[in-house]
Image (cartoon, helix red, strand yellow):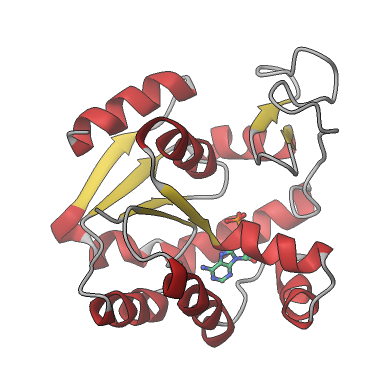
Length: 211
Ligand code: AMP
């Protein structure tokens, strides 16, 4: 079973993907995380991706698809796609790539959430660069200030989580990614993600997936 987590930046895709991997043994494929890994490793791909990411734009489809193609060579089933596909062209390409492994996307979980909640979450977000867990500076603080509860790594603020970049990211989402809701309507599970704790949302998602 391959699942896509679809939703705006800050909707909780990453957190829910991590929970599905921790508790239900899925494999996490986050294109954002793969780009950040390349950026910190200062690879050629990282340098290219950085110029787009830091402006709130999408990395070009051919570059992103290629990176996913490489990932799929090692894993092509039980995947949680987090932040990929983000355009119709990527969705078409993913379908082709999965078909070569006799696989497909079986469910698309769409986390629907209000804009005001997204902004608050993103500008207050702290992330653990090791385990990728997210915290909120006010409502979901770590036990020790700025330290991850799970692996004691120093928490960071993502470079693209600043107010000026968030507005462009939301615009990019609305224009380029939202059309996927219609594209995947045959397998879409729409979930109201407002006012829900991560554990609560996880229970709803698990039930909807029947897992
Ligand atoms: P995320 O961690 O999913 O919020 O992604 C961070 C940034 O990485 C995005 O704002 C994009 O600039 C880039 N990115 C992640 N996934 C994709 C994708 N599927 N296509 C193009 N750019 C992406």
